[in-house]
Length: 485
Image 1 (spheres, one colour):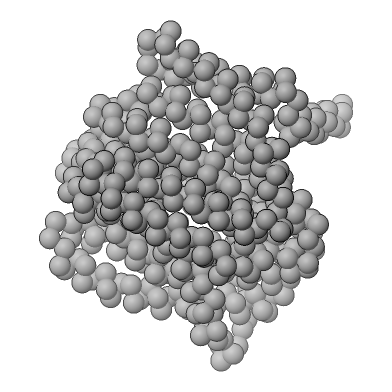
Image 2 (cartoon, rainbow, N blue to C red):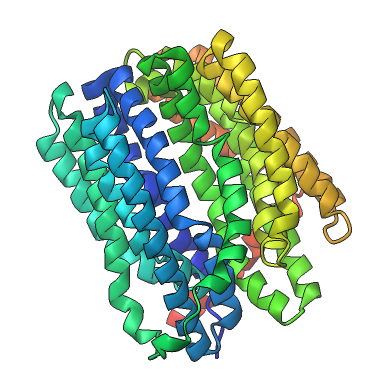
């Protein structure tokens, strides 16, 4: 059976990951002006609390399920058995979450109405089978219907959300589109599943393994989700959460564009580990790291360079603090890029998730301690500093633990030219910012000049990754044209 195209799946997966955040990103200029920083902060805080319930409902199934499906996808009977075992497990954990969730709604003093509509988000976890399609490397099944639903959600948002009191409706629309998107993925299942004997299903056998994957999810949440919750608990200021939420939103879309390739390649590498094809695995690991550094380094410097123009232009007045937060956050593009690549393409596919948990738990402890120390004094900025230190700790541990399999020197080999090019790009961006006063024109010129400068610098330094891809796509274009003649 022919293997699915990694390039096509990268495009599909990028679209899918973007869809998870594209609705709030597209609508952010409108939403930020309608609700203000405090309204956005309420959404950020309640969503952070909701995330803990969805994490328990998922119980590590997403990563574990993708790996197991990828390794058994050539055996339809075993693959179908795995699907139903993991799905039944997810339904049971979601049911437990919903019971506890009911008490949260009843006893919440200020946010009960928001939690009530967010029930759909918790329920949606039971229907999320994206892990199955990822394991099958069939990302188009995820994208097509979700695209339609997301677009519908955006249309409804602009049609019905008009004033500050519509915040509940806004949150309900986001929750509803997430639920419908997950349900829509089920319509394609009959093409991939076969009948199974329900008596032979063994859900219990997966609890231990999924728990291994659940531990890093909880630990990671300390510096992704708990940050927002702690900002709310400690500062008692919805504005601080609003500033942090908007900066996170921008960083997440950049991370999605770069890191989605890890999800795609992870399924292939899980398949290759089952066949012990280590030479090909190492080659794909280095190529992916090369790609991530190629994009993450300029994006880091670019975000710092354009933040002063972009934030007020995009979010409107009242978000000045988001500028500083976004600048502090930007190095996470590179730091998380490296750790995410090693975690997704080495530790998880090779069955070493329990080993990599040590790094994640260490980072979580560092982040939690620093949050408690820094947030009372620096509010949302303190949470960002804590996240950068924690993520750097994890990346360092990952590099040390993978040193016998992954050639760490390739990071410096791939990165030094990009670093020089990005620094030159940064100087050009700042120069453009100083000589152009119009907000929109300055931002557009900064982006265009930044991209051109970065590419030109790499061409001058003869960056092998860029030159090889220009040659490859140039030859493909010429071949396509010659076919048409």
